[in-house]
Structure formats: C-alpha cells, structure tokens
Image (tube, rainbow, N blue to C red; front, side):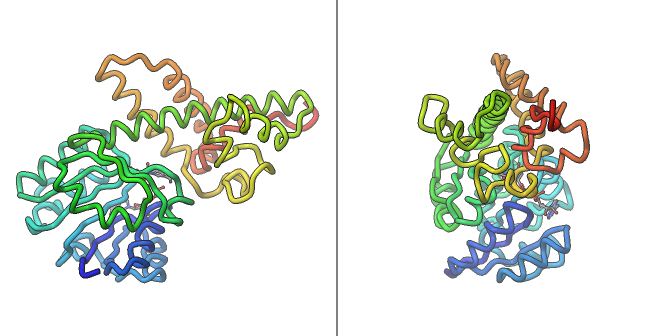
Length: 300
Ligand code: NAD
C-alpha cells in the first residue's frame, strides 16, 4: 500500500481498527490525546504523532474515531481546525458516531475546501473491530466512498452506502436504538426465566433457536456465565460503554424529534439506561450490564 493514513482517536474501537490498517500494509500515523492509547497503537505498528496536526501532515487519508460530535467538530472546524491545514487531495473518513447534522456540517466544510469526505460510523463492536469484520454505514458522494473503499475493506466486512452526507449516521442511530431495545428485552426475559428456576444457558439456547432470537442472544449474551468472550464474562469491562449508549439514545431521540417520528420503545430504552447510568460506576461498564438492573440480590 502506498497510501499514508492519519488515524485520530485510538480507543476501544480506533485502536484495533488502526492495527488492521497496519496489517494490510498501510503506513499509519496515529494520534490520541490519551498517552496510553497512543502507546498501544505504536506497539501495534503505528507511527507516533505528537499532535493531530502533526499526524495529518503528508497524509493521503485521514480517519477519525472519536467519542462524540463535540470532539469531531472541535478537531476539524474553526480557524485552528484540521480542515484548514488539509490538502485538497486528502480524503476524510469520520467513523465516530455523531449527529447527522454535525456530520453534514463537517462534510460541507470539507467540501468548501475541495476535500472529499464521508461519514462512516460502524457497527459490530470491539470484537469485530479486532477481527476486521465491522459494518460501515456510509453517507456522502459516491466518488468519495469509492476512494474510501480500500481503506474500509481493510477494517470491515460490509460497506453500505446509506445515501448523501449524514445518512450513515441516521442508519447507525436507527440500528443502535434497536440494539438498546433488544438488549433490554433480552435481559428482562433471561431474568424472568432465572427467577422461575431456568438455567440462563438453557433458556438462551431455546430462545436463540426460537422466535425470540436476536443479536444480543446470539453474539452478546448479557447474563454472566452463558458465553465466553463477551463483556458479561468479565464483569462488563471493555466493550461499548453505557455512557456511549446513552449518547446514541440521545441522538436517536433528537433525530425522532426532528422528523416527528414516534419512538416509544426508544424513549423507554433511554430512560432505563439513564436509570442504570445514574450510578457513575455503571456508566463505564459495557451496555449489556443493563442485566444488573433486573438481577436480584441472592435470596430475594
Ligand atoms: P473510546 O472512548 O474508547 O475512544 C475514543 C478515543 O478518542 C479515546 O482514546 C480518546 O482519548 C480519543 N480522543 C478524544 N478526543 C480526541 C482528540 N481531539 N484527538 C485525538 N484523540 C481524541 O470510544 P470507542 O468505544 O472507541 O468509540 C469511538 C466511537 O465509536 C464513538 O463515537 C462510539 O459511539 C462509536 N462506536 C463504539 C462501539 C464500541 O463497541 N465501543 C461500536 C460502534 C461504534
């Protein structure tokens, strides 16, 4: 690969994504405001940059994987923003989950400088990020997506063109609202079974093969002891945090308000995650820890 990539944001998702780009032969220069995250990216073969501006210097493609819209806006926009320093030939791929309006604003500002840009949020979680099997939901012009495709293919298995700028974010937020709903539904069904004497593993096998089957049951069982290699098997450490799920449910509710869509289950899911995340200890746990909202102390 002759393309040079600047990768900004090397957290739970960005870290393994950048590592896959290195494995596919891209030259990757990395920057993260967190030193430990940057160190582990360097250990995975990325070059170290001491600032975002240093990272994008000479890059053909800039990929960002940041926590929220505010981080993306402050990085790219404004007089000190990266867009001012980027060459018109650079391709910008933002993989963060942010509002469609923030994505459109960044892509439009890039366009004013002649820079091709797409929103490309992902689905699949940290395991898919590590395996290089993410799904990318892209918004933007066809020609920008075609330029991005070889880079995305090194990190993912499915690449969807959802529509014009911001459409990837709309698809992502619809998906994550549904994810929150079926995760909560899975947790409450498992608890009711356990409360009535069932083994959660046996009940999970039954429901997976029946009409209640869903991704939370198949890939991400929230009940401890049912599956290995999921956050429930390690006290809900790592994975996709309750704080990030709350952010996405907030985006979903804003989206619904903007289009006057009725999303009663999404609203309830947000409420339940708010209740769960009210305790700061829970906010950093994986979102499948919502199971704890339903679990009872032993003996009750
Ligand atoms: P994370 O908090 O683990 O990582 C974000 C990283 O960005 C951190 O290392 C942080 O230090 C860094 N950062 C923040 N501001 C920065 C800046 N200005 N410059 C450089 N680095 C900066 O979050 P994550 O779990 O990797 O998620 C990233 C995005 O992907 C979020 O928008 C999230 O909603 C989305 N997402 C996460 C998952 C998941 O399973 N974790 C799945 C799909 C999508």
